[in-house]
Image (cartoon, rainbow, N blue to C red; front, side, top):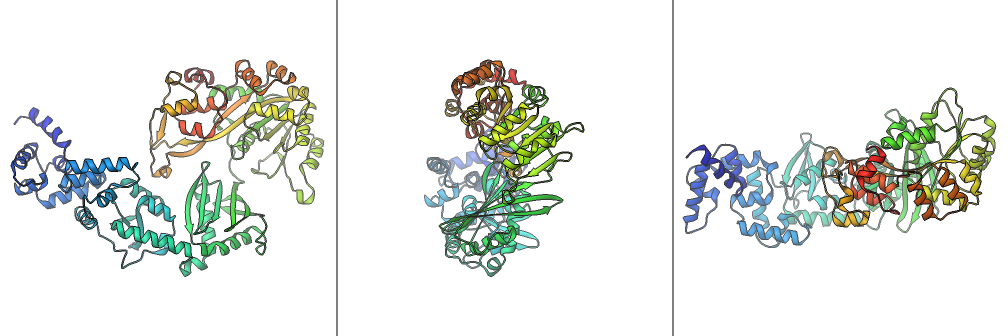
Length: 630
């Protein structure tokens, strides 16, 4: 048979049997042999698998099949393997996959096969163990290592169907219900590293163990090591949060366990679950660390801990909140010695950045307000602006609560109400220090707002933060604080509203098109998105399978020009102010800035919808990219 005849034959074979495909690629079989074996199998009175026919014809041995399967485990899925070896017919595999799809993929294929009696549990486990060369661990006679098990939440084991068993020669043996599921393998590596030994466990044994483990956690059954090592537990929680660059730690007592979560990239991520028995001693340990009263358990408390990690000073603010199941602890991590981000790297697109530097930062006086909810990156923008303005010929003085970053060359004051060092007291004295630039940590009330306005009227430049939904809301809020409209219109030089969105992991980014529901929520049509290159992250070890790594900001910058000032003096409505800002002052809304960043592959449409207010229909993407220079 000629080479030209072989090529299409090989392609048709590849489409039908995954195991035979491996043997063909390894050149153990030829296309002619496979074709002949198929003809023989078709004529047999008793149905036989293609692999069995190939073995009986002497074209391949069982050892060669085992070797091919074991060398290519990462290329095989469970259904393909069972079908290729003849344990599942094409019709049975199709039925099982259809059932799985009907269940919204809530069950793995192995569970479907057992539940619907395509294969017995013992048979399935034995087939996989034999073909993959993996040992079967018996959870009925040996218990997993408790120290390993407590490394991650029990729900995580249930989701990914694996259990760490023990350590052998420096490697961790981990038993998988489905050892061919690459997602489960990568999920195990997130908590247990790369140096692991794959094993197998029967599905029913795993379910029994998980139920027992959750019952033990609920009733407080815990090993003596865990019970008495709350110091190690506390240190482990804090150090892992620092290493993962978390912004907050949540220690939450529940009816059956103590749940620990980290806020990473703005989203709470499970860390570990601990037995309820450690709740009280762990809370006391954290109180001792931050100087709170360990005897007081009926009232809310605050505390503070400063420590050094890898030559970086970290300020840990702890809040103890009394709940029905115990004291819930939330810790905010602030890295005091973190290097300041240059203004050019805060995430503004080129044309907006240029206008920000020329019309806002380089303006000689006026109030520049950074607004947004807690955790939206306001402090980063403020300190980047301070870093840009910090020159030998300029005097900068601050009033902050607390001082989050220490900057050389400026005078920073940390508010301390306990000794009478309040914002009111500090702001009265701050202008006597002959500053060129005044930084007020936050406008909290009408007094601090009026002080910022009055300071700007005397020719100073003022930087401050505010809590409003967007830039227009900032103007309206100032007017609601009974600040005279002519003072607002004459002193406010720039308002920046911002939010933080998760950044797509570049190691697993892939093209993606928004669906109709997303378009409807955005207020866009497919025509509005022409030229966009949307992406999503499919999930990988680098991003802990979230599809995101790091964050970037979306900005809405308003430079009040004559039209805006006139509208403020006339006390126009919020809607009218927004329309004038967009049409006359060239303002790009938060939603539009986020949409452009999604269109150039920096974040996802889901993140835009999750984080950004939708108060105005966005303009077409190609027009926004032209305006922003993206």
